[in-house]
Image 1 (cartoon, rainbow over the protein chains, first blue to last red):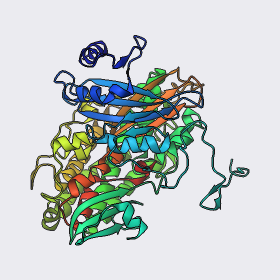
Image 2 (tube, rainbow over the protein chains, first blue to last red; image 1 turned 120 degrees about the vertical axis):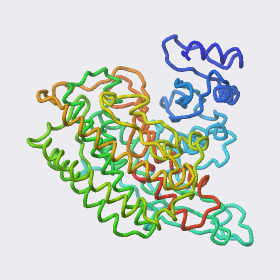
Image 3 (cartoon, chains in turn yellow, red; image 1 turned 120 degrees about the horizontal axis):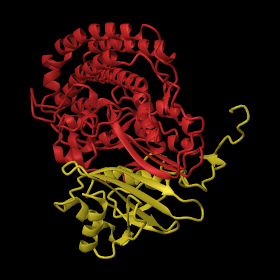
Image 4 (cartoon, chains in turn purple, yellow; image 1 turned 180 degrees about the vertical axis):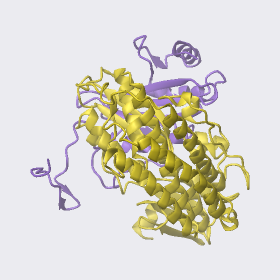
Length: 163
Length: 380
């Protein structure tokens, strides 16, 4: 199914869910509050049947910008693809978790939280995954600064002789 | 109740928490499993990962596109060629680069040889996990010959930095085709030997048949891919279903589990898919070697300046362990704005709790071996 058809279908089922973007954008942008409904539709609708979530990527736009998550969906049955983007506020925005719809999302959402700091509401087991539990900050943010100390150990910042 | 137990949740009177790893011979790297057991029956497994986290994605935001390639080597370090290949293809697609025929053929040849090497490691390690010490010495002996071929080609044995954006670092050395053909002749007979010592070995079959059955819907929901997904009987191989590079020019079949000795989707099927895939890879390499164009400069299409236009791409391809995906955001500068690696074993490992529940602790070792994980790729 083509992107335009998917947009029409989602818009009829969940009005106001899709934020209009440029025509050749190649993705759909969904409002966070409608995401759970849209996700359910994308997965269950017999014409859409996106049964596999390939990847969730968290992105930081920089200190002035927003955070967003890109969901790359694929249908093993109907062989079409879709990219969904959800933008959230940098400080306190959160995205509803889809970990119960696609189990892939479980670890990927934890990773996006761990490295970028996007919060996912309703996740069954929401905590860091790759970094230590007592790590402060989210390293893939553009404004992340290396801490001076980690557990009392000084972090080497002088890189002379390394490069 | 100690602080650690509190974090783990409620422990029932008969239940015990067992820590497996991070230093454990059968966890295939620094993986730690916290297993909640009822007697010897597993009731819950919680994998703790991140011990090998080397900030791959953060590094990529600070180096230029060609400089990312050595980092991809170090992700799945048993299949470096394939990582190089997928990353190079993703950037080439972003930049619209046409490759010379010879480059494409050489890439397929080294990628398929690497696939064989990776599967050999998986086979041997799984045999070792289940108590068979001999198979790993055999598989290592043969893997060594592939590494010799790679050393002959590009000088490195493990981390190659061989496939570059738009080309290769070196052309094939003289007589490579002959040596590779000699290896394939030798190796085809070896697969039969593996079947004798391991695949149809009574003890091995007893330990793996019907164990850890992975249903298709669970596999798809967890994003499993590669031999783990095909072991459950799904005919899904990106080289066939979404042909990239020049895979559509060769005659071969995707290996799909059939449930030959037990239930479809058990550990044995996942293992068998790898054995069968080695046979298919041999077929592909043979055809590629025969069709390899004589002429062609492997440096011809390498761009002088690698500055992909503004935009994003999600590109995935079939690695030995499953779908490897790259989500690359370019802002038009020589440095990636954001580079996300969707690693196959990350998803394959997440299904462990689902399929190992209800089995013995010793079966967890078999199931983990059949998932064929590499912590370098999981933690990145």
